[in-house]
Image 1 (cartoon, rainbow, N blue to C red):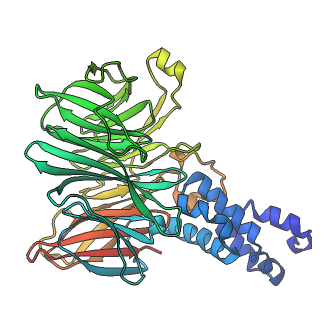
Image 2: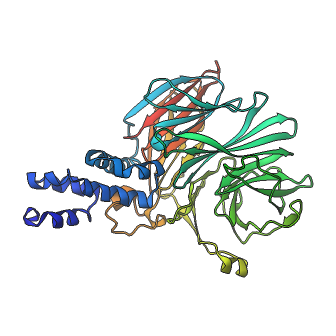
Length: 467
């Protein structure tokens, strides 16, 4: 019946279907099968995906892809959605690479095709997976060593990843470096957008838009957040532009900073969440302002390891998602404007969503992990004790927090789930190996592990392809 309609009308109808339904329908007869070769059909489908879940590199090269390449991207996404929350599934492929024992951190970028490697001396390297050995590197001063590293994703038109190195120079002094990983060129590269020298005990660093923020103990039991302007034109950041005293802070209370906009930042800590307004720069930059949160909520986030989603700076604002030990914490922060500043507050839609578990069942241990815009993963093996496998929990975020309509054809309820779905898989390791770092590139479903042998000190990188 459908094959009797004009060609343009057939395409218009297919554009309302999901990728899976398109493939099924076009398999029913030769006439419809030929429609799957139409480039505009898959270009439309992939554009819809990228509008909701940005991938800067893929967006830039969208017009250069042919019909088969576009179709492969759409079908890959649908398969990944379907598999991510299956229990005890087997990843399609696991690749292992030996690496230098000085490797401290690894992170996937550019659709999972490239790997950023951070060495103990602060050197940054880029490796293309599956290609001949080749390194693009930037080396910092040899008298420094990495003792804190944050790798937080953000999405704009020209970069997708952010690396912050806090590197020791001498006792009670360190340098903080901020890099962007640009992904729009034929091969990614990183460039320095900020550097600042700090004296004192730095607790946490974060960056977003044009700001670097770090927390520094005042010396009197209070926490001061310092905000500095950064940028590629002037990477040698000056003294803090704004210093915010948020009050007494326990020496046992870790926290994580997220820069939500040029006007707001968020603190996540064991006891809850707080959002602060970034005040305008005072005439005297050395002046410290005492501030109060414009929004806060007491909740059980968990301690030690904070799994927080990246934040997109484009027109489609995603919620901030925190994977807590007992529940999912979701904040959708409204756009900040002059009216918010005048009212002394901001609009925050906060929800705490329990994990989809049967009554009486607990989630269990949560170790190193990562959370993206639609998926999350974490290590769920509390102790190895010579066991040859490490178990990972995978989680498809609830469609209710993603701003998707219930009848959205691209994201059916069986893929993302109305309330979220949990899955799992296992990876074989040597008995003496332990997980040092985990990275997720959710567009490709690729997971990267940095592993350390506690007996020999040898390290290796394991790259896991889910589909």
